[in-house]
Length: 126
Image (cartoon, rainbow, N blue to C red; front, side, top):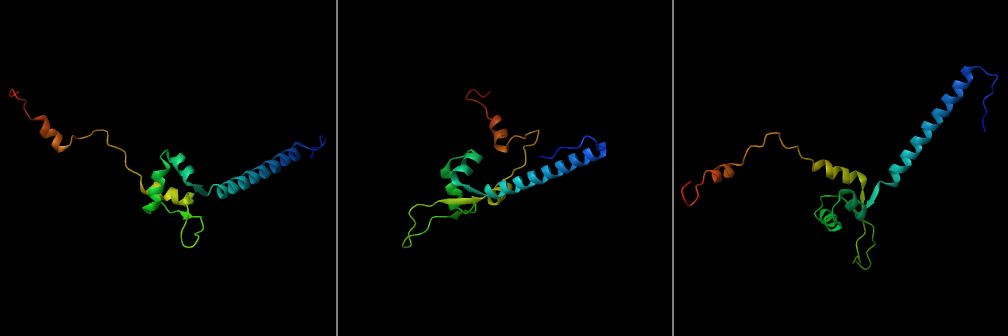
């Protein structure tokens, strides 16, 4: 354990704190980088939970090639028993970026057919 010498000047103590803080920042950077690699591959269940949709919708997105996925199940005699897909975080982010929509304007103009329906008179001609 490093113990600061109380006889040293305040400048030395500050340097110890600066070194400790720099080491702490490096440690946090290493942890963040490791976490990126751990979470870079997602299961269908994880994607479904994150997007709050069913797994069947995620499978449909994979089947329709809207989200890139890798089937990690080996094929036996040319037939895969059950698919086990993994989706890269980057592929999911790309899909979500493509699906972004602009927010609705403050003033919504009525649809043309709706305006025509409002002009229709009832059976009494009112």
